[in-house]
Picture 1 (cartoon, rainbow, N blue to C red):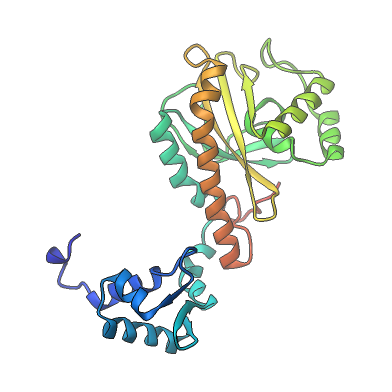
Picture 2 (tube, rainbow, N blue to C red):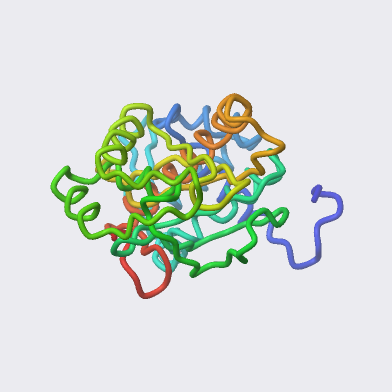
Amino acid sequence: MSASVREPHFVRSFERGLAVIRAFDADHPALTLSDVARSCDLTRAAARRFLLTLVDLGYVHTDGRLFRLTPRVLELGYAFLAGFTLSDLAAPHLEQLVARVRESSSLCVLDGDDIVYVARVPTRRIMTAAITVGTRFPAHVTSVGRVILAHLPDEEIGALLARADLRPLTARTIVSPEQLRAELRRVRRQGYAVVDQELEEGLRSIAAPVRDRDGEVVAAVNIPVAAGRDSLESVRRDLLPHLLATVARIEGDLWVATAATGRAPAAVPGTGTHR
């Protein structure tokens, strides 16, 4: 909305004050009065008043020449971030991904030996089973499950495979513990997982891990496709770059939320992010 059509309630000075805060970023952590005035299209006098007000409130520090934001600015977003779940953080990024690739996408976490869908943006029905938030599948036969399992300690992988029901769901399902171990090692090396018609005939899926600030895998994002329409080569060539870019954006928001609140967002309300 342009300045000429602002609503009567609009407070222009408040907008300018927020603009002064946003003038600081990773590339410009310290700014002079002239820098702020130029960046925000303000007079030096107006910029000075805004900056000194922020100094008085504790949101900005100055050495007399340079101005810097203080950690107190994190308070401005804390209430918002504190109530956010990992699903909330991921949802807008999944929506953007689906709009780009025109395929469904989901965020899943590991719960015991299963993966659970905690966020989903559909575009068309691929699987015969309806997939909704809360749907569960055995982790070892899904792309999201394998990409999470691949980053578990070896002893945990061994224990899971020892107790898993490795019955074939299709003619392509890997049922050998040794083959599954080898596949998980490959997934760990390459950084993503592809499952080709092992969960359901006609369904291919690619998934990538979501990591927290400590580098631990806490979730995974997938893109399922129809095997008759999308080859394995096209899945890797056309979908993987978009998937990895989406995961990177989710991780960026996750890291910011964790830094601001001192804790990682839960997967869904009332749960932990980790398995």
